[in-house]
Image (tube, helix red, strand yellow):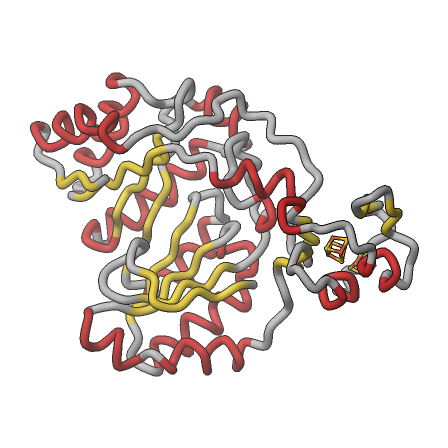
Amino acid sequence: MEIERFAIHDGPGIRTMVFLQGCPLRCTWCSNPESQEIRTHLLYLSNHCVGCGRCYQACPNGAISFDGHPVFDRKKCLFCAACAEACPHHAIKMAGKFVAISDILNVVQRDKDYYDNSGGGVTFSGGEAFVQFDGLMELLSGCKKAGIHTAIETCGQVAPDKIKQAFPLVDLFLFDIKHTDKDILKKTTGADLDLVLDNLRFIAANNPEKVIIRVPVIPGFNNDLQEIENIFNLALRLNVKRVDLLPYHVLGKTKYEQLGRNYSFPYDSMLPKEALIPLKEMGEKMGLEVYL
Ligand code: SF4
Ligand code: SF4
């Protein structure tokens, strides 16, 4: 779990982002690989490292060897954070921690005045926030009791009964639609399009105003007029008025390196916002509100 206060891109107004770990998908371009599993991760920022060896000396489990710089045996790592605390240059960070629901709600409630003055609230993100369903429901209930607007970013790969239970407590679903071809979606992300669409249809049928469809526009995957038109048509059929297009970025690539993992997605340059303008214009001509 991580918290980011004063966010302005994921729902209306000033918001607190609550990132819950765990994700059922494995999108090949994932920009938050440290959120995929529910556990702590060790990030090594090699560009901060001066090779002093203090982390190696601090490790209680022999998970670090030293060759002018630390080499991590992540299978041996206990995630005790001793190396991160010993590093004078902040070259080691621990990502993801277990936090009590009451502590999260305390942080979230601190900024209630900002939410009220800006039309903001709290956005639960991930990973996929529904993976930690029981905790999510407690958080949503706590926010509602405190009169706080709630949004959830979801990939839609969620058991339908969970969406139904959460529905009354959620003011806005930021619902990812990545592709309309079942096989391409399955192969590239692991998602089941039928399940994703069933969930989207349920929400939109009950209140289309509660949905913004979000499309990560990914080169070589869905970055073409025909596929984006398919998604726009889906929005229109479900009476969803707004679609956000999110250009592919490569910020996640560095995280893979920091986690000691390979980034296998073949595109390693950002998609400029301007490249999405023809897609935005197409959506607007079709009668949608389209935001970049
Ligand atoms: S987190 Fe603890 S066990 Fe893991 S490498 Fe650092 S000091 Fe060693
Ligand atoms: S303690 Fe920090 S700066 Fe020193 S070797 Fe370890 S990671 Fe590098």
